[in-house]
Amino acid sequence: MILLENILKVGGIGCLLFTAYLLLMAYGGVAAAMRDEDGNFKKERNWKTVLGGVTSLLFFLGGLYYWGNQYYIAASLSTPSFFSLWLNAFGIFMVIHLYDLIVTDYLVVVKWHPKFLNLPDTDYYTIMSPHIEGFFKGLPLGMVVNLLVALFCFYV
Image (spheres, rainbow, N blue to C red):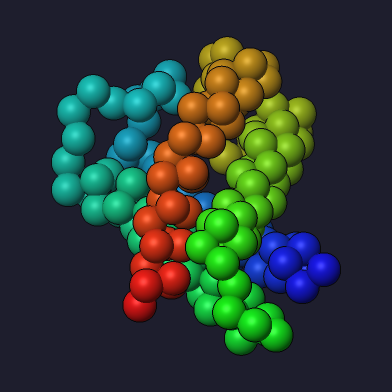
């Protein structure tokens, strides 16, 4: 029960922080620097897109999963197993990943498609299938990142 409570609590906090992160990336110019006028990822990368986008997201999420595991360890009556630490971190990931798919991608981008975001009318921004593909492509990355976080929490 502690595991599920921790996943939902830290995952919920993570969703709020993820929303703040997306707003920072959007209004900081990082999102615009990563995509062309059609909304597709640019072929060439510069320091702003690599450092601002991918690297900061991995550090943000990795730090959140680490904090979630530390919170779970402190709340547990006994030392959690490696598997429960991985499951905790992966559960937090799934809460945020589902939030991104349902709220950000579907409700905001595809369904609402607000004018103030200046989203192009390409398939990526008007239909769900690219977002669902991205959701499934993100699962292995989440598994690996959370494996590393669980290893670090278990052995350090």
